[in-house]
Length: 266
Figure (cartoon, rainbow, N blue to C red):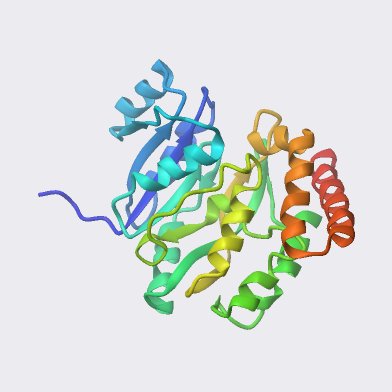
């Protein structure tokens, strides 16, 4: 008899990450177990071996059109109510799944997303006290005295000055969201755009103020590469222009880009 899971951890993989197995182990060590699979548009013998070794399915996106397409494919293959789109380099603390599921059930059926606090992992060192993380907490001040927000303006307000939601920490409620596609207009800011679109829907955002995952930052990471490109700068402008008049959007996008670069230089 097959075990019924409430949550899926969909690992979005590419290339040959030296951190992938550690990520898988952190998911297997959760206090509440999830269905786990690997989703990729770059199949390889490396990923096949990892899949076989850990007895987890490997789904191949044959119609890859970029990162947004990969995220949509990973989301689409889920068969449980809740799913986390896992970045292959990150680590999850043992109570991540248990805590997210408990929060979702506490807040009711109309939860759209649940997300958590996190630490930044540089090599073997973790920090959850950086300037970047402090600013994100300030942007999330709408949650200061509450765990969830459901009003449209409140949800949108946390996104006006940047993206404070760590995408690999997000657990999606598929029964509330339904079918969902990340915008292929973006290759860096698919998540920020997604939160803006979801903020317009009926339902709540839930923020768990506990450090429950470690987001790895290193030179080969996609985030690091994107920060160094003009594409990221242009995408920041696109998002800010959706929220602000053009002159203000230009100023905010420059400040945001500088802040992102500063994080990687320090």
